[in-house]
Length: 259
Picture 1 (cartoon, one colour):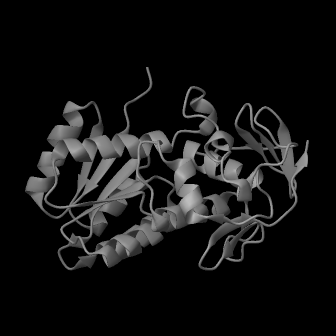
Picture 2 (tube, helix red, strand yellow; picture 1 turned 90 degrees about the vertical axis):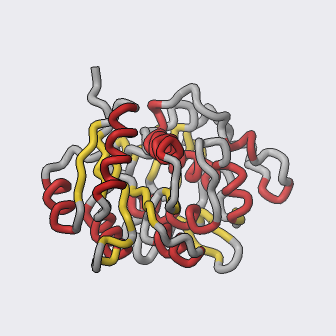
């Protein structure tokens, strides 16, 4: 039997930590706690953490800076939990790579449900063969982004040295290594690959990703594109494959051919 997911709860309020621990453990999770950045770093150094819940106000420490530190060296998802509900805080948090943002006061069961949703999104795409319908169906209606006949689910396509198998939902790199993608990352890449060199608006991408246990919005799309770039771009800071079209959305800039 695989071990249950291990959650690190980072909050300087002991009562909040206890509340989340009790609820998460009741739901079968393993839980570690940290009241500050030093304790958080010590737990992360031990490895085996599957998700971090992070309060933005840790005494005198800046939770956004801690999120940046986590994202710089770890791949696990981050759920921000904060009493600060301003839109700008949510936007900044998501731009830093947070996977969800929950404001206090919260219902513990909502936190558990949203943690489970984030963890499901992090599963490798090939591990969920019975998941939502392929994105080509979700985008089949807009005439402006019709998929080419040569790129249909079940085919293998190549772009910039990468090979994407739309049937097995696997991405193989130029060095023949199979790359792990989450379900949402695969569906985002699939949407781009099926419409190469065409701009997909954020609204279109949100329509593709709805139904994956979350409600995406503009900045969460940007964060997901950023994570995908870190996996497929030679230089994520200067992307050449997934281009930003300012004020509109994103496009795959290279040609796509049947494999």
